[in-house]
Length: 105
Ligand SMILES: [Zn+2]
Image (tube, rainbow, N blue to C red; front, top):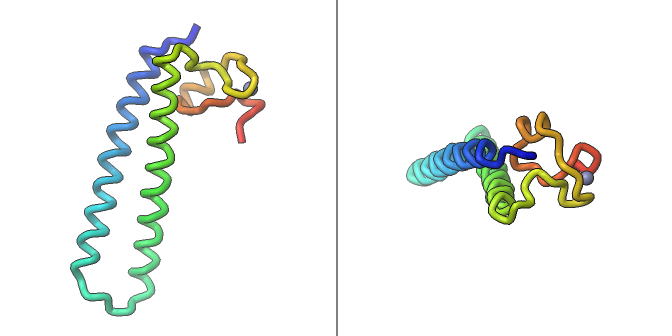
């Protein structure tokens, strides 16, 4: 039996953290937009990295939302592919995963 309250807390805290981080990234985008672009390639690379980070954060937030939805549905902790329970060690490492070890991408 999966302790959903435990994972719900972890997922909610992680979601708050990612939301904050994503807002920080957007702030940095806005700040960099205030400065005249001087053709420095390093700066462009930095923005690309920020963009990637933001995208990773958004992807994880969506996965966390889906996991929180599964907690509400009572299906959290079961692999969405085969329906087998996901090992708790795996959930501790990846609480938002919808897949067991065998069906992880
Ligand atoms: Zn599976």
